[in-house]
Length: 119
Image 1 (cartoon, helix red, strand yellow):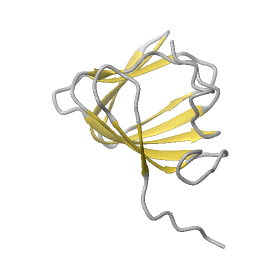
Image 2 (tube, one colour):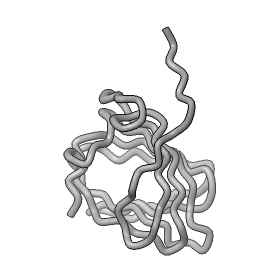
Image 3 (cartoon, helix red, strand yellow):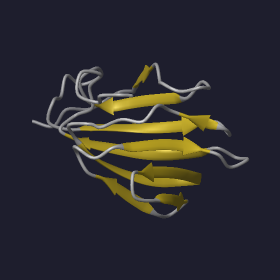
Image 4 (cartoon, one colour):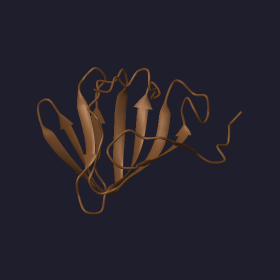
């Protein structure tokens, strides 16, 4: 039977500035461990600590630009583009542009504070 998600749960975000995380599917909002799906709204100048997660993260940028830094390169992902960050690899997200960014993040398995392994 399908399960309707009435609304997301807002989760506190890591980083130097307030960022809104609206989890629709995941450990907190739907008690789902297999996958998490969240809408992120990051302000201009936001940066979070680096991480080496135990999950793959698939991100689609809806508005603005998301910077994704790895040990090998820096990628600027603009509205209409997507990026995949693989589990076990160090990555750092930021929104250095003047408009910040809005994006959808899908994590497999679901994001958790125990498996993100922040710096």
